[in-house]
Length: 48
Length: 476
Image (cartoon, rainbow over all chains, first blue to last red; front, side):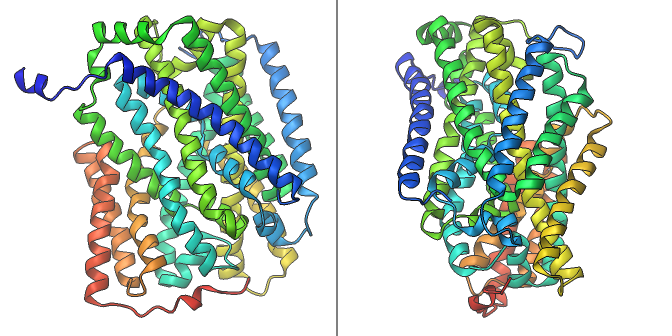
């Protein structure tokens, strides 16, 4: 019991929110990054 | 959820979505396939000059399978944060392959497949061992995607299992057959954007209805182990996931064909960006599993946690979003598997082994026939509905992890020995499979990669080879 308590690190609310919000922001940023790269390459005729 | 339970989405709406997106994929695929000069290289590798946007998107879309949208939430539900993290670590396979991808592009300007590399670097016997490993893995992967298509479309919209499977494989086959790799990469770009945007919408709406502090407090009260950062099983699963993904990416022609198809200046960046972008997907879908756990949502079948949550929180609109995400995930993975495996068979078996005198047009025709042949074989193998294919795919982790070190050493180390590579793949696979059976499925890739590394290093130190990397510059 004591050992299992010693080997437990629970994520607090701050870090929990950070992980979840961070992953959502990363997902949305990925969409914008892909579109931006595509737009720059399209303007320069470098998509294909 | 059982096969006979009520579907999340009315069949009429589901059919309308299937027809809409099928027509879109096929029309776009055929239009993109008309570009280029129409030779075998163009059909198999999209002209070898695709830019960063398409290269990144195709890596991301191919790596987002039906599992990423359905198994990752299950991991989150069952194992909590470590379930999400361990699934996300599969993105490391793409990121760690980035420098190797750049090296491959430099060493093999005319290369077409991963089989080309193994044959030129380690000889024909190593090639046979490698082809057996990649055949087992690829068939398992194709079957899981095909069966996943049948099961998911049935659960989401009430389609007959066989109808769902035929629709998804049929659509992916038609545009791959007529448009080749250009169709696959072009549609992957649209599919990756669609998947990411719709997942972000589902996640943001879900957490607006059920805020994060409430999810956290309920998990702390009822399931604190799901928030434990030192969960021993979670740590082991994470290691296995990373090594399994490295084995998948390092050996499989899906990823090698993307290397050969991309412009040399963008190869490394696209693998890093594709891996990073992909990692956010299982984290977001996995977090939906945590919301379901916090809400104590009744689940008859835990792998349906994502559609159940989306339908529960967002109604039929949520179910429609999930349906489109799953349809896009399945087609984007199946088209990549069909195209790159057909290339491998056409180049390595038909051209290099059976008909070295074949013309460029005959090679292209062979690649097209392989696409159709693979689709038919996949349908035939997946027709009798098996229920334990996920374990078959995990089983292949033992095999593919054994190829990581032979591939990596072969690209950078002139002393890497061909006998050591063969023994490394065979011994790694054997030990990994033994660990899978005797210890636990999530140990297989760890044991396989460790044994393969030891054999590769010791064997190459013992009898070093003096390999001339110029030999990899074989003409097509």
